[in-house]
Length: 393
Ligand SMILES: *Cc1c(COP(=O)(O)O)cnc(C)c1O
Picture 1 (cartoon, rainbow, N blue to C red):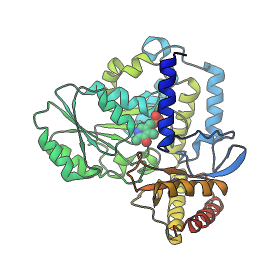
Picture 2: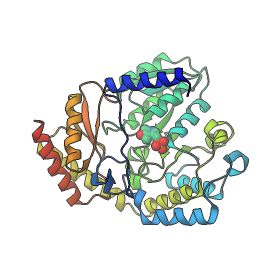
Picture 3: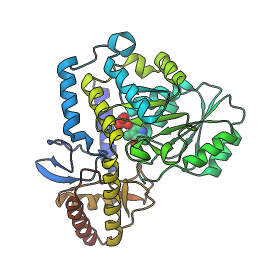
């Protein structure tokens, strides 16, 4: 290893550790579910994005296994060469029907869907208006674009309007927002965003990674929750969270898909998802379309969990969704809280600066459809004990 590079790496690692920003990885040795085994201990899992419990679902495992047996382990080439599988087309058709849009384009992940789409549909004479708390993959997508970029204040429609007024000269404008914000669990005011977009002739793109499977009828997304599905130009969904597998997609017009097929770089230059992934995703979407009981179970567990925390005296911030912050404030205390929960076999992660503002440290907890009330009761007992020990309640 080159010594200059090696010493750079060590210096950077030392800095991260000194700033308490270094995070060791946990290793999971069980299937995903309400409880997972981590470092040999079974824990109640309140840290995953497996909202509907589909990641461990028998039906998805079965279709993944069958597809691997029948069609192999990998696609063997990028989709524009000879790696475009019938299963890819079927997944896109299934998603387009589920979302009620003209066309869907599947990417390898939600991250590559953002990184591939935003720079492809914007040029140097355009402007992108982005919520200041948008996800890292949106920020990276914007960085790859030549368009002028403006961040507006979080969910603040006056700030968005100011940005729209300041970019009147742009050829086209794209407003981008998360549908559900991953750290506070609040929802973007899509109805108001669409009104402003109409008034100022801007396109709207919603990253619904945390809205897919969670918001709207049968988990169709935040645009459906607000009844603005036909006004939102581009919906990004992930197949990695509620859908339980991996992948991302863009839902919109046929022309959008057609253009991305020709120009989006992660589509052109990176191999598509394997047969097992496409098949498991199709099964997941079919389950969600047929039956909204998993989504209902998720929301029922969410109400139970959040009411439980509130009646213990915890501050759960401004959440409107299953993402449930337990606001602690002090960074060191949040780390201590996480440790105390871990000692009680509860998995919920501390989120601290720079992911959230200084002094806004929290434990992020996420109930999902696979938890029983008994799981949640056990977790509440642990939160109460740890919270009392740290003087939080
Ligand atoms: C998780 C997430 C992504 C990335 O999705 P992956 O499929 O895991 O790559 C993109 N956007 C938002 C808002 C997310 O929360």
